[in-house]
Image (cartoon, rainbow, N blue to C red; front, side, top):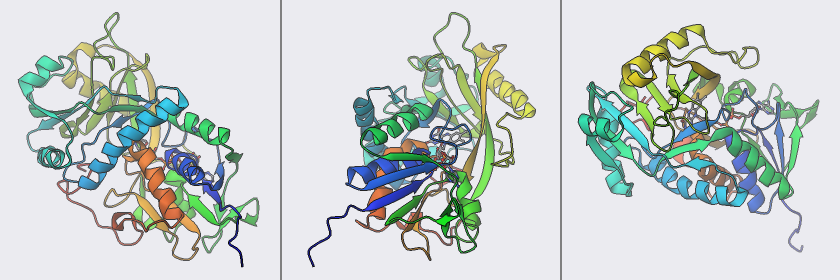
Length: 383
Ligand SMILES: Cc1cc2nc3c(=O)[nH]c(=O)nc-3n(C[C@H](O)[C@H](O)[C@H](O)COP(=O)(O)OP(=O)(O)OC[C@H]3O[C@@H](n4cnc5c(N)ncnc54)[C@H](O)[C@@H]3O)c2cc1C
C-alpha cells in the first residue's frame, strides 16, 4: 500500500500556556490542530493569566530545568520577534538568601557554573548599593541573574493563539469532560483524533480522578500590585529586577507598563476552581503590607492598585506531567504547573509535541505514577 498522505490530526484541550505552546509546536510539525477551551485563551480563571510571570534559570541543584530555561530564553526572544510584540523584559532576577534558607541558593551557583549561566553574587551591602529599593539587613547574600526577567503572561497566551490561528489552527470554545472510564467527551460525544493533548491545568485532577488527582494538589495564591511612589521610576522594570525571597515566602516583580509593583506572600489558600470568585482574601492585604514594610521602606503607605487570585497545581516533586494516559493510548496529559511552568512554555510545548508525535519518549521525571516529595535542597523550586 502506498504511504498515507493524510495529515495527523490533533486536538489540544486547554488553552493556557501549556496548551497554546503545544498546539503551535504540533502545527509546526505539520499537524492539523484544533484547540478547545472552556472559557477561551487568556481567561482570568486560568493560571496563565495576569500581566506577567518571573523568568529565571535559578532552579537550585536541578540542571534539567536550568537548561530548559536557558533554551526558553532564546525561544521567547525568537517568538516575540515573530509576533512583533514585547513578550519578555530582561530586567534580571535577584534571589535574596537569608540565614537558614540558603541550601537552594548555594546549590544554584554550582548548577550555574556547570551549565554556564551568568550570575553575580553580592553581599547584603552590595545588593543594597546596586538595588537600593531593597532593605537587606536580614540578607546573607544576593544572587543576581542578569539574563532573567519577566514574561508577559496574558499577552503571550493571546499572541501565540493569534499566531496559531493565522497559520490555520482552529480555536473552539467547549467544555471537554471525561466519562467513568476517563474517556474524553464533548457535547455528549467521544472526542476522537489521532492525538489528543489534555492541558487543562488545575482542572486536570477532576477530569482524571484516578490518574492525575493523586499527584496534584491545588492551592490559591493572592497577588497584590502596589503603586510606585509618585514621580519615582526606581520601582520600574528598567531599574529593578524581579526577586525571590524564600526566607519571607515571597516573590515579586517590578512595575511594568504602569502595573505597580507585584508582590506575593505565598500562603496557600483553598480554592474551588469553578465556584470561587477570583477575589483576593482580605487577610492577604495585611500580610503583603507587612512584607512590603520590611523589604521596601519606600513603598510604605503606597496604595494597592490591582490584585489577582489564581490557582497553582503542585505535584509532590514539583515536576511537570507529560505522559500518556495508561488506558487511552492517544491521550497525552501535559501540565503539572507546580508554580513554574510559564517561563518554560516554548520548551515545554516543543517537548510535549515531540512526545505526542512519538518522536521520543517522555522524561522519567514527567511520568505519571508514584511521585515523592523532594527535600528543599533537591527541589527545583526550593519548596
Ligand atoms: C500566582 C501565580 C504566580 C505564578 N508565578 C510564576 C512565575 O513567576 N513563573 C512561572 O514560570 N510560572 C509561574 N506560575 C505558574 C504558571 O503560571 C503556571 O504553571 C502555568 O500558567 C500553567 O499553565 P497551564 O496551561 O498548565 O494551565 P492554565 O493556564 O490553567 O490553563 C488551563 C486551561 O484549560 C482550560 N480548561 C480547563 N478545563 C477545561 C475543560 N474541561 N475543557 C476545556 N478547557 C478547559 C482553562 O480554561 C484554561 O484556559 C504562577 C502561577 C500563579 C497562579
